[in-house]
Figure: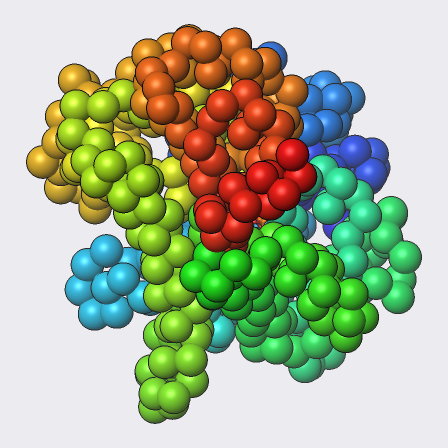
Length: 474
Ligand code: UDX
Ligand code: UDX
């Protein structure tokens, strides 16, 4: 029986996951650790470091009862029966595999720390998304450093939560994946982890398999989702060139039950910490396995995403009479999707940088991303400072109305619900004319905006077609 759990890494994955485990398993003590003092302080305060609908209530209910946040990782490791590793695994920015392979140094460091301080046997669970066979590396490190009487079992238990719906995804997952060694000890460890999830998840939704299958399933699931978005985005480019409407096409495709409606919303490109990284992981894995055709196939998903972002950014300049130099542009939304303050790989970063390089002044508004984060994201790319002047060209605004004042265009990058209910007439009146609106999430009513007077550009629709349709409507 697992009575004490330790989690290494209190990020977007470790924090919410362990909070829900603590909520559903009041008999288990859950200690979440992080090397960052400020992150732990935030977890222990009223302002959690991660914005996730529903998370506050869960933490409030359990914190101090059976849920604890601390930087004292050693004590937590010593006490625990089971340890989740949820540290980040960014794409390498240096050396062999740069730009493709996952940087596993934090995972390795966690493994070494566990081997060093553990005085009793532990189950070590890989929660971070890792390349296939990473569990084996953790296993090797642990086995090579084992003390007498101490043994380790390494499991893979990848997370499928999406940011913004993490709590719901954790409470009602489609499935839980647990991979383990096909030995008696391995199966026993798998069962112990199953027991935790069985507190709230029906048994048939808990899938057990070998470790490598579990690791690959996680990468493959994200790659399939990313591939669908790149596929629909490629069709959106055809729509813009021909006059077909992407919403109609996506609906038509999605009603084929074999395809289904999910992940068919054309957008300015996918972002987030996982899709790009995991697809690149598969690319790198395929290259290492001498399967160049497989690598090229998956790499195209990333290239399509880059194409979509660039295409949208160029369209803005083009429509603004081929120059944005010295023009003011309001940017609505900076997070990689709604209901999260996370900006990792956010398409908004790419679009803003493109506009800054073209000499535009940006008024950025996002309901959840802090100003400092916006400035960091726009200032650095892999540690190199860009040529434009973020401090002079970027103003971060606290509401959308003030962001729009005296601008030539609005660029909507994130599909926050609040953008649906704004007074666009008031916004229009405060802008320079002609006033443009570029809807990167195709969430606003083109007709309503055009009635106000906006020139509207959206994903997957040819502009002339929109205008013709309105003339026909009138
Ligand atoms: C991470 C991975 O990026 C993802 O691939 C995986 O599926 C889940 O874990 P996330 O939780 O979103 O995702 O990362 P992040 O929010 O950066 O959290 C990681 C935390 O680990 C950070 O708070 C960091 O301070 C902490 N950490 C990192 C440690 O405590 N120790 C370390 O050695 C490294
Ligand atoms: C994803 C997976 O969904 C989740 O299962 C996995 O564990 C982690 O990676 P996340 O990155 O949080 O989750 O967000 P997700 O909702 O999948 O969206 C990713 C990106 O795709 C966002 O930028 C989103 O705006 C975009 N997207 C999503 C589209 O452009 N169109 C769609 O139809 C769906």
